[in-house]
Image (cartoon, rainbow over all chains, first blue to last red):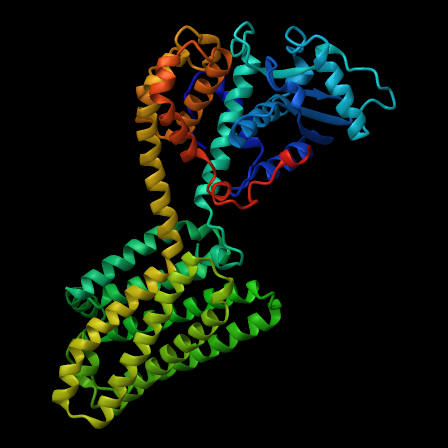
Length: 188
Length: 342
């Protein structure tokens, strides 16, 4: 894994990623399983049309049963993957357990309502109660100029986490030959 | 000269394969490469003479060289059988039986070779053992044992590879085409040399010796590079993409500067001089960051840097294309992930 830069806040991110013991051959699907196992709860990731054009690229709601990530459609698949990896960063760096939410200001009503809708679809998470989750529990990657996007430590860490994961996935793709049989394992 | 070239090529291919030490399934291919390198390094005349003088000057270096080559073929057979056996869901036991049968053949041929060597009288160091002492019965036994094992192994490898050709990717197919060509070459050369040994006189044998040496070297390079084809492709791909990422970083720099001007809250390390990224050890990660920042800034302020956008947009798109995973770019579903959970 190659560091993009060495500011002090990256130390925690690097150690969190090395703790994950990610395989050399990694896809976003594989990462999804790693996060779900690590968090010991169901992980649901949904592309959400309502977020298109909103100040939030992606957001995460977490309770004891489920981690729910909602992300906005982007012009590129790789960019959507980056949004999702940013949210994985929040989850794996424990930001939900420690931080206040940051989606409340740009999306005071829509954010919680979307989460409640998706939890109903996922049929898990509110213990039968369809009340929208507390606003303070929503963390997200924002893109509004009026929002302090990368000025908080949590956001910087989650963004760096996403960068490093994307780099790992990209390297794994480049270094792996698409071989259907075991010849790659023996001779590759 | 040819023997130095072969040894150098094999050494390079062995170095490329060193990470396989930590990967048990890939270890036999590494061992095959190590033994072949050792054998063909001994084949270099000054090395042969130096080693033989250390061993007492009775051509023990020739015995060692031959044993290295046989061991290389044995390891190559193990690697191919393991790969093919697993791919055809061949149970572990039959696969182990095939490997064990081959190991028995290797032991028998090695012992016969050693016996032939032991009963021969080889007083003067000579890298061309068979040319110098080929008339002795012990040396004929030596030659037959080595040739029989190499031919048996080569045929077995060719048969296995051909049976699994359809399951291989184009890179592996091209690689194994080289392996088969090398094996065929080795068999043909051994056959001609054995026939000449029996039916032709010394002048014909001597005339063929030069052809045999060159042909053998080409065969070995074919086999070794064929087995390393996949590794060479990955090595070349990583090298090319590394250079390309640095080049694209340079190309997106004007757009990045225009896009991020006055938007420090959207730049992760706003105080960094991006030119440093071009020479960093991780140009892909740096390019990924710059692309993300340009896209973020463009979403927030699509008209703020219109001129730079119009001028350099193609640089951004080309950089994004470079960063697109190869399997996604090729249209497969390899990058399946949580996005399907919609």
